[in-house]
Amino acid sequence: MQVITRLADLAEPQSYDVVVIGAGGAGLSAALVAAIEGARVLLVEHTAYVGGTTALSAGTTWVPGTHHSAKVNPTDTLADAAHYLDNAVGERSPAALRQAFLETGPEAVRYIETQSEVKYRPYAKHPDYISDLAGSTLTGRALEPMPFDGRLLGELFALIRPPIPEFTVLGGMMVDRNDINHLLGMTQSLASFRHSLKIVLRHARDRLGHSRGTRLVMGNALVARLLYSLAQHDKVSLALNTAVTDIERGADGVEAITLSQQGQQRRVQVKGGVILASGGFNRSPALRKAMLGEVDMSWCPAAPGHTGQAQELARGLGAHYGPSHDTNAFWAPVSLRKRADGSTAAFPHFVMDRAKPGMLTVNQAGDRFVNESTSYHLFALRMQQSLADGHAAADVPAYLICDARALRKYGLGMVRPGGSGLGPFIADGYLTEAD
Picture (cartoon, rainbow, N blue to C red):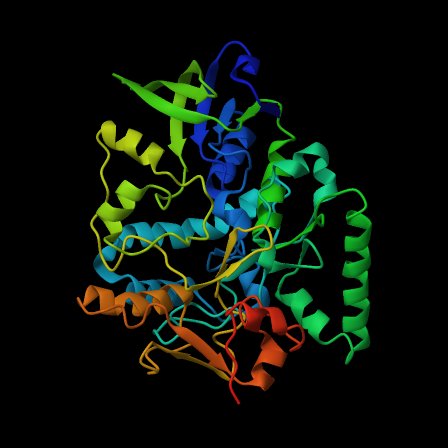
């Protein structure tokens, strides 16, 4: 794989079978499959990093019926999964499309694992998000990427978008749910002590030569595995800090694109097709206002490259958005705190605190208004309901309340479990305490 830092470095001829716009999880996957099938691929990324929001996430892939699923939930069937999707989605998407996903999803997982270094494992305690619907299950359908040794990437390691700092410990050590359980139980179990000691010592060695830990988990692990696999293909070029400013369409489809980088432009011919995988539009004020109304998006924790530019190019070629249903975005509640460098941390409350015993959510009137254990998306939608009803934003901001015992056991947002070091959080207003 060739990494292009200047457009002048584009190899001749400047013609590719497949051009992929966006190097997040979807774009990396599309480029990898095209490369596996023998195509000459150009992967274009608007920012300095690969990984997009995938690198900041848990990296979970929801695919029912895989060979991994059978290990932890052998009684689950695709019919059950179809029933769940029928109840969760209904007429908001074509039934044939959902069925195609269910039938080919297991094949896709096996293909990518066989043909590359992308490897998954089932997470035994990962229920479907709307678990009260018929057809839902408590385990088996969600796959997480296996941890990856970032040292194998060499210089490419620096290209992976770092995780949200508040999701790491000890100055850049990534931890997944399994690690967290061991770290919390290290004084109670010899196995947990050994596991904790192993990853902490590994991190200490990493910091001698790296700015952060190289033991990658969750979304960073998935991105690293995709990038490592792409690097094995010599017909792939990766252009960073590069925008696509024009897509030319001819009688037989897309014929060329125009790349822009630091005032330079290059026209690149396309023989096969262009794949748009550039993410959403959360960094576009105009599109946010048009599609999401007046909701404040100042603190969106997603990756910064989601400008919606590629979507606008596609619309210029005749593409259009599908019908709106419940909402035009995926949502999550976040809490905010100033970092030492003056930036503001936006911490997504996905699963580690608000759904745990001892946690309570109230609005500004002090009323509990939502089930704390619901999915982060539905949780945030409920927070916005007062806006949709035309009332004052009584539920924004909302407040998470817990007692000292729950705080010690589970932590709260950016506050780590254990219950120590609360002073700075209380002093700056992130935490409020009462007798």
